[in-house]
Length: 402
Ligand code: ADP
Ligand code: ASP
Ligand code: MG
Image (cartoon, rainbow, N blue to C red):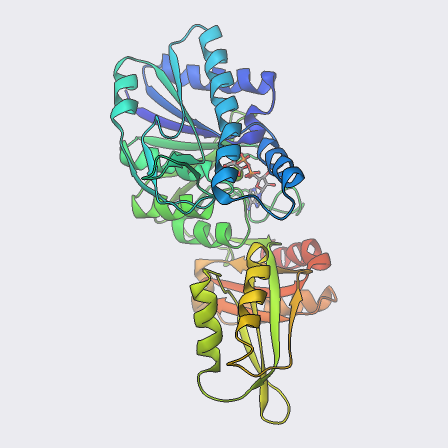
């Protein structure tokens, strides 16, 4: 007998037929004598629809506390419907909201971090032989307010339960049958991976491969939770995410694209010591995550600094820079939201020269101009015009993965 944690994403529970499909997958493992804890996301596009409703009420942006109150409702619907389906199929089941399942988080509404899971209730339900269905993506803070974990956060909920309950298996069911070398919906030559390491998966997820939420991979690595990413619609083995994997011959594990990027340029800055510190210190205070930074020589003793931030933080960043205009001298600040970041990831590239040049050649052959470049041991990212994003991913993918 094992303890199995299964997570089903929004498309897997999008309608009644899909809910019964999921219920049958769960019951199959339960009837083999396993304890089963299930995490579900909101049905289909429910979370997007709720965000749209909030915008109708307040286009300027509601408070984050009220957004969490609203968004957590999506998962409340899906857990109860899935529990009803399991009930109807004759098995004992209980659905639990995040707080009932013991999810304690910090107070960063809409992007809260899990601090601890009190597993008592989960354990009690399991000891009663109930299948437990937990609302993903949500928790409660120390003031008893509902919080959410950020988009795609149900993956993290599942890994957190698997880690704190020391589950034997953590399966992430979705609408594709595993992790591919690129988004299989966009790149026709994308290849399914049997295995991928935590580090490579973490980079891919952070760089835009939405199949797993990056925080969930970070947590899986920290607590050594082996994950399987698999399809809820086809019964076949998926992709295993774990510490070390058999190295295949390929140098590059995958390519990814992130559209949630904006580029900000501060033009004509005075060229004196401490300027970069003042700018990036201010952005840090505003909790803006800065990614690629480029400094270039300007004219007449000035310089330009260009950097990228998540699109959601762009307005905050520009306003923050403008508040510095008294202490910093510059000509103007510009914001460009029509850019995207395309990356390749692979642990093998560290020891192989020529990876960057192959990537840049593929972009050159496709006629795509590069605005910025950033590299680490296991990835290379370029910033390009958003409209070329899909073409760029396909081009760099095909240059490495035959
Ligand atoms: P869920 O609702 O199950 O959480 P998501 O939409 O969050 O599903 O993630 C699954 C989607 O991720 C797939 O439909 C696929 O289009 C996309 N995706 C992006 N990159 C990859 C990749 N490298 N491998 C597999 N899927 C990917
Ligand atoms: N429903 C949430 C979202 O759409 C959480 C999730 O799907 O993981 O982001
Ligand atoms: Mg997801």
